[in-house]
Image (spheres, helix red, strand yellow):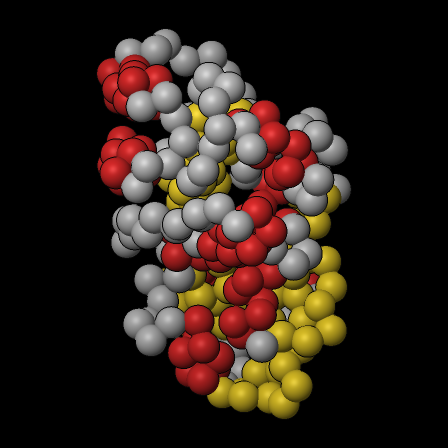
Length: 251
């Protein structure tokens, strides 16, 4: 396998091309390497300098991340951007980014992972972005307490919690990362619990006055599911190493 082969493998199941018109991330190979064989692909959430260093220590020839370096505008190659790119080039390591296609994949995506951890059934599209559903909604097989549902996602409390809805819940909707604004959609659909990554001040009174439970578990924490799932698929299908690099930010 080469970096180009890895790109083709990713495009065989991730909607990289079809979502390019609405995703400001430059998805695909952002920094290339030479054509020599790839034996290890490291997976992570962020293309930080520490992540690249960790991938280098693991002997990775490709680093697959959810948050890459380029976001829809030209940037000067200086400062921290220069240092990251220099380390990639010095390591002969390709950087591969996958943003929205990894959020919305129905089986391997971040939101699919959150929904599975919650134990949601009868999953339906939710959280529309430019007409494309990014998140998911569903019902619990049996109603459960709000606390029990939250503990399914983490033993630690969410970073932000607005327990304004029913104490016993039967439905939930999820949009990973910066999905707080989708709480309005959850309110309109009568959802009991809305789960996302980060909280926004402007949704507080909306949630309280509408009687919905809102929980934000952190941008990073809600977006590890996709990279982990793709890493497992890669190792299973190729027989090559696909380690996940966990570098939580607490945000």
